[in-house]
Image 1: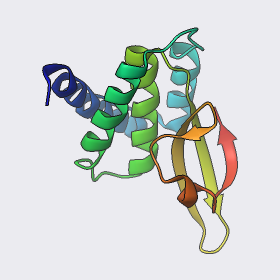
Image 2: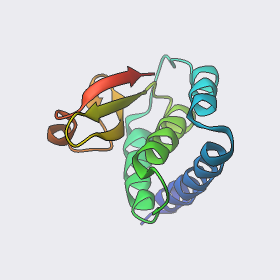
Image 3: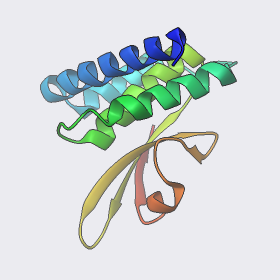
Image 4: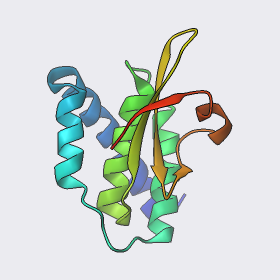
Length: 129
């Protein structure tokens, strides 16, 4: 693992823990507003950094066992991709009917980033921001 990839892994862990704390105390609506304000649509993105951030976030998310891991992971991924790769992403919230379940994932140019694309097809999209 290169030094840059290790750094992104440490940042990913920090983002996940920070998002978890903020979500517990302020809620999802607050995080949604923060994303809207802090993650404007950038005009460029770095493919190398994009891939490094996604892989670091995937490794770091395996260590997180808290409440709503998909939502925490999605917010952390979106924030990191905007800040370090310059990529404008969307967080998508979906639900299934029976059994009733909710799920969150990140999309970039309509491509699912942090989840299996076949898995998210069973969810009806409730919100995309």
